[in-house]
Figure 1 (tube, rainbow over the protein chains, first blue to last red):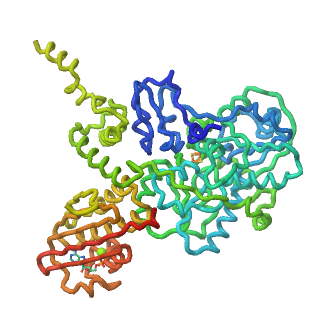
Figure 2: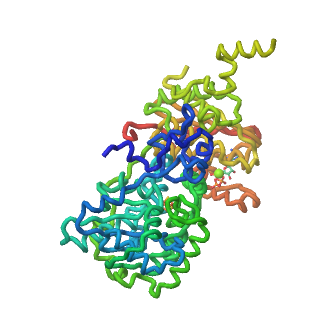
Length: 427
Length: 147
Ligand SMILES: Nc1ncnc2c1ncn2[C@@H]1O[C@H](COP(=O)(O)OP(=O)(O)OP(=O)(O)O)[C@@H](O)[C@H]1O
Ligand code: SF4
Ligand SMILES: [Mg+2]
């Protein structure tokens, strides 16, 4: 597999892109530039938050995932449904029918990610009890937040929880439970590009326990259109597990602890900046989600309105009779899980993209140059040059990634052709 | 010309300007990040810079913070015009504070600032003239082990 293309799942369809500057302005890591009228994504800077997809009026920004047909490479197939799946409005289709239609697509078992979330929360609670020092602990649930830390806030990487994200924990658990099955395929239905990437390009895990990852919107279309049904085994989460599909679920379970919860990538970034500067009062656990309302706001989730999605999720929570899963005894099992199931097995490395150059001396020179260039720019952040701000443009020029004439104001003055045009216009 | 000096940046700080409190240290952090200074050095320098900046805002009339980045260290020089510190050793003690009630109300005045600067720097020097002003200079060194 090609590493570079796996760094993020968000891609730009150049045939749709008209070079408007909508995405440029909303990208929290300034990962987008417009070059020759088309948006391009800086691979190492993208954190897959989905802001650009949300704000693209031309449907040029999209997310890559696996083709459902890959499941035919496996003899026994298990699909993990994200907790936010229950936020989807399936019109009049009964929940049991939805499952049956999913089985008809070729799956033998369906597991709700919430079971993984229950194990994750029980383990987190235990970890917080046993380790009084490392505070705050940052949840691994949202891979986009983890990427943000890697790209922009490496000093906080040691605060990332050592516990596998719910979907990974569950996938390892399933593999243990089903270890006697040959050629087993474990798949995940993703609510967002960040979770697609977290399978293809793992952070903190040597290898993903998940074999393929699908787009929730695509599966939704198939469920709605196809009325073929089939049978299989279903493993459901309890109220606690389901509740993690939207913001507040993790915090509600850890109610004995001091939890701060935030949603929306801008808010998250703003908060983490304060946290990095140690301007936040002491607390135990950070539940941070890139999407507004958490995963019910996931960009691949087929919902029209995120508030309705959170509401739908809460309604289905109410219908569950147990706090914990009734199919898997999570409170009894969580302590007997293997280390591999529970914990990350490698270090999450910084992916520093904020520096101007690896070496300090070169970086300092670029910074001086940037200052000089910036002083000549109009500072109106018009975006015509293809950079998100005049300062970002000055930096690009200093790094030789852009040319000064790409600024429409300076370009006007300096190109010969323009000068002649001006002259003739005056005459 | 100082040896190995790579970058100089100055920040003006206005006494009692709580709206912009923390801006200078925040910018110092951004600059150090862009220069690819090791995270542990950035962390220490930013915390020390923040305490220094807050002391100017709280106690002095106005001041200038100068950031100097060298190949092997980060240095901050904060000069202010203000009341000065009569007894520096006393001021350095943890818990010692002359913060007035309205400052205490804002959550400052634990008397931990200077101690915190000391803890997070490798060299700290404070010079003060009563009724004139104070100069706080600190350095955080960049060791090989950081890299
Ligand atoms: N720049 C300064 N000018 C005048 N006095 C100062 C200055 N900096 C510190 N002081 C004096 O030294 C005392 C101790 O400062 P320090 O920063 O350690 O604690 P604090 O500011 O009182 O509380 P904290 O920093 O914990 O909020 C202050 O209360 C003040 O009297
Ligand atoms: S909040 Fe949930 S849906 Fe959104 S990026 Fe994070 S994990 Fe994905
Ligand atoms: Mg102080």
